[in-house]
Length: 235
Length: 77
Image (cartoon, rainbow over all chains, first blue to last red; front, side, top):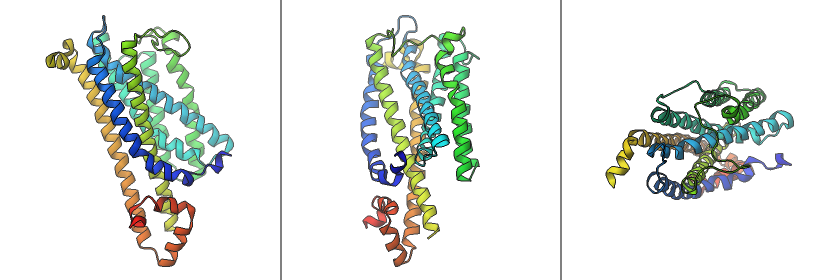
């Protein structure tokens, strides 16, 4: 059924959607920045350095979410030979990598005033670095291999192996003694973040999700036109 | 007020660096992807313009190309 959902049939939507998503993104990120930098209160222990959380946490969440999605799509590619998923998975990867790098860099900028060091080989930080390596290997594999079947198989295997790292990132703070604090925002249990800080965090997460959607659609359109360009050569 | 926002109790350098790095990364990623997209569209337009009339008709008749042509400048002109 999913194979009937052909990329070309949704090109009209994906080519027009970016301009609207870009406009919504600008509005949401503007509100988020005002909330995060001006309106939200400082933390009673971390003072104003807590504001780094508003870019660090959403970027970490988004990069982990994107990689999980790529891995799920990879199951469809590898086991059900789905023809639409490879293009979607490939188009998701660039924004996932950039969000991962942002999470590492902003985490480092948070670590210096909070822990007194730019970097620590802590379980959470190291597992996030491993995720960045998986993103890099995944993107490189798409560039290196030219045979369609081979590239689909190899990139899917990389993504599925990388999925093992996702629960390690999530539970690293519980399984090992780490510098990184345990999760404060929980879907299944009580969130310990005050609403005055939770609101900007949610707004910034929405903005980052919109940006990743925007980049995904633009990359998807690029890949689709690239395929059609090759088709014109064969005419 | 302005000084408070800039200095942020001595954490300004870390906070502003984090937000600047994030926004610059967004701008760079957006620009790179946009350039790639425009480059592919230009390439498609150039290839389409060089086709013979018969081949252009064949391309326009195919749904796979019609969707792209409808969203590129050559077809609109």
